[in-house]
Amino acid sequence: MNIQEVDFQTSIPECFRKQAAEYADLFIGRVILQHKGLYRILTEQGECFAEVCGKFFSLDQDTSHFPVVGDYVLVDRKEDTNGNAIIQHVLDRRSVLSRKMVGKDDLAQCIASNIDIVFLCMAMNEDFSVRRLERYIAIAWDSGATPVVVLTKKDLATDVATQLEEVYTVAIGMDVVLTTNTNEDGHKEIEKYLCKGTTVAFVGSSGVGKSTLINKLLGEAYLDTQGLRSGGQGKHTTTHRELVYLQNGSAVIDTPGMREIGLQMTDVSRAFPDIEEYSLQCKFNDCTHTNEPGCAVRKAIEDGILSEERLNDYLKLQKESKYSLLDAKQIEKKKMKEMFSSFDGIKNAKKYLKTKDKRKFDK
Image (cartoon, rainbow, N blue to C red):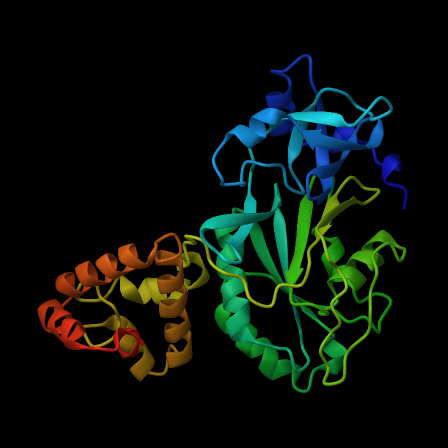
């Protein structure tokens, strides 16, 4: 598919048109690919290369203000015949999909922006993991986009009914779509989410079939794909984020496989609405759902309504998100404060101070 065939101007949402109208001397474009300090953008004239102006480097070490795939930007020219276009502004984002940067405890990495729907892709083979799906759901809701679960490789599933039941216990109130690459129409359920001006992103582990689905939507082998490794796991193919427009004016973003995603101050409550609902019924407002009397969450587990595994994941993701921006000293201070304010805080704090190996206590 030739991207230049897309009527870019008519695909721009109205909110971005209004922002761009305030800068009469600049032109609107959209980032469709980034590589280090160079960007490929789409304007009404077609594709061109661009780079950022100097003001982007004068800010702090947080790079979240730099353009990412999906951003609408304002540039000084619509083509790069006489040199790369210069990105002057990044328009306000409607949504941002991000994760913790590897080795950077206090920084976030923006994956993509201005996404309307996030397709959370998970294969129904040996790589199937409801616990990982919970993490994807938490980050998708927090991004501002709407998550949709896409179960791929249905033909490799050993028990479709059981796997679906497990997914529905965590994908509460969400759409769940089944796809297969062995059927030419295996992607049709996804097409109903694609309409003019809508941007969707495909997120999931390496080899779950994201690129294959996008190629089917495009009607051609635009993105590289590979088969399965021995053991049923997919081979990693996508190495970068790329936005591709469909002929109807919708856009899809392919992302590299992400088996584990670090949480960055993520509000996990929307991913666990069942636990949040029972939490409102607990006797104590600051209930930790461990050993407090009158805990409605523990009661739901005892009654078989909630699973212990789901609560453990909820507490784990809450803790990870809460401590994501703190250094070691700040984490220590926060833990002490929480111990003194909890139901049996003084006893816990004294025990903590007497414990030589605090890592054992933290577990």
